[in-house]
Image (tube, rainbow, N blue to C red):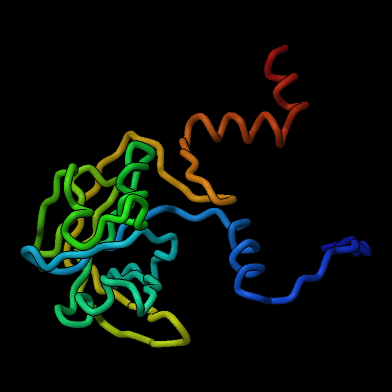
Length: 195
């Protein structure tokens, strides 16, 4: 494979917290809400740090700030929920990110929640909702990397996914965005299709 090496001048910045945070905004991420607790002892947070780890057994990884109100609940109960949001859930994403000052169980108001095996609340209309048991925790710096074994899950389709990019929420629609991407990536191909 041939590669082309170019000398490109890039600006170098100090790896301060603000610079790092701003640089990471370049990475688009799917928006999820992590839920924890039971009864009235509930909390949750909006994250973009969910990733699959393994299909067999079904496990995923999430990074949780150890100062977050959800962290002690995850530790105490050993279970948590992962709710992948659709573009219809911007209000839920904002509520669970702390906008408006809501805390704990207050964040769950105004949406329909279900529970599966573990009893943790899961968003009824989430694109996908995973009921997870903590399998392993790695604590580093300000966060904990939590490996969760999926106990059960629910999937609903047909809506665009909610992503976070450059400091704002963006809807990601597979059909519309695939067409737009093809138009930008292959402009001459589109002209040929019209012939």
